[in-house]
Length: 448
Image (cartoon, rainbow, N blue to C red):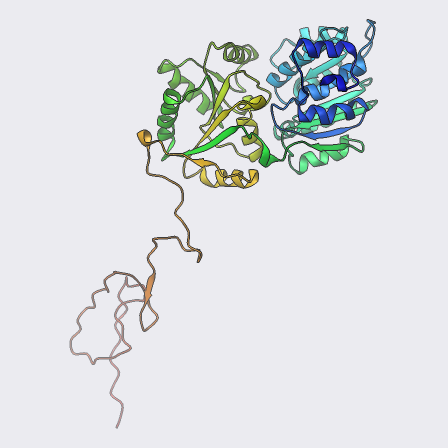
């Protein structure tokens, strides 16, 4: 029960109103430490309730009587607009019985409207690094009184090239008293460097190992001969699988637009989401998917994090993601909160090694699936013997002279030469069996 935590009664009232009963493992592990003011580095499964794990302690810290706001007290940084918007909604839901106000700063929104909001000084500021830096450079943002800093999905922010922006914003929070970093993956060396720089004697909480993630999601691969064959498999899956809502992931915006166009031409209720879409279209795509106005969202990795949609029970990787972490986030859109999900990856010969490396990273073996209606010829690389030679490759024969010949190959025809003594060591054909050698004059017989 949430009542086990020393949370303010107004927050417990909000939790009860939202019908939250049992805290998730990440909430049970992180909330008590966060309430103590500890710096945290938390790794937990996507969809496990990480947002509430840092929002509730922050609200407990800020709660109090209504008063004039003179400074921003909490900064929450996130990699994408969609994740920032979802986090804002969570903050507003949990703070509904308090006087705490929050604000949102992301790209795609009116810059002057955001500046006006900043002049009202929200208690909690949520946003993406790029637009935060723009407001900072314009002199509209003051972070010197920030007490709590949260970096959510920090590994993704670094992957997107926000490392310098994040470091600058962290440096602006000169009086911060607590820093928390949450993510669904462990990240790489760049993230470890950031943890060392921004966290002070942190408590490390790894609620799930990577291999334990998405336990309720079936993970399958279907092999394909080429991209046109992939589209045929995709059409079959969307027409024959049982699902409420689905996301089709691609690696490029051009591929997303192409697939979206073909689905719409086949009268599918679909929408497309990627970084080139303006904020209005991006919001419309997500809202229509959540409301059930569309069943299929075609998207790049901009939708791989923070997107929480009820009834989303199938993810199709038209393109295999470029890393194990991105794969975890993509399939984490389904199978959330203990519900069943299905993740299917379409694999051409160029995707096989990447797929295998992700299997090794996750310490899992994906289910191999064959769809007889759209079966192709490619089924994966040829098996390899213990000797390291591929099965089915013919060995080369070696004759008595040490010349290598392919099995079954005919010897090159020798040209007949008249008036010439026979010699055992004279060859009229080069070793490669292609070009004739230059004739040699016969040697004079040796004197008796």
